[in-house]
Length: 260
Image 1 (cartoon, rainbow, N blue to C red):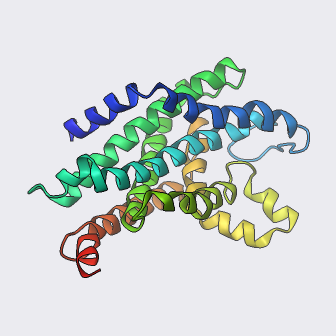
Image 2: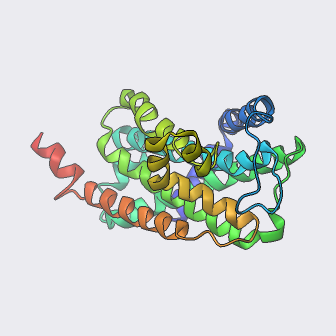
């Protein structure tokens, strides 16, 4: 595990453009989208906030979730590449338990996701969007770690079914964007229900990404996140177990490839 995590950190440190590209997307949303819609989406007093909230402060946890989501999905792309011609091709033939290899890869993904999320929070603070991270550091860190692990496990699960790198664009359209836009990253659930978008409201209610964002949002203010932690942890467990089954050479990915 230490070797795989260290390898991913070294590879990331040699790709300076990767950090920049990871930050440009959420910072554009924060600087442009939040400014343009500040007066359109007036945020009323609602949990976990005790006062009227600027829109940029509201969407900041959702943008942190965006960083975690895109890095988790990018890890699935890297997993497909490594499985075909890189390090994972060798590791998957090693006499090691497949779940342990996948857990090591998942930990590496989570570490990179958290590093990028921390960089975003710092730059957002420099732009004037300050979040009370230090006031509730441990609950926020716990929520961010579990969210990063859940989205990384989802990336692992997707890598079971993505056989070619060209299919990643379809994954972007059918997984990443629906998960992000049909969540509370940009607007609260009561806004969706109030506007009459009932089917979007129902999808957002059961979207695991919604609960990852809400857990971070409530943790920032020291409030009870309700059932969100259980949904995040349950999704993490299900995705990781199914991914481990998919990479099992006798039952999952390996056996399907052999029959094909």
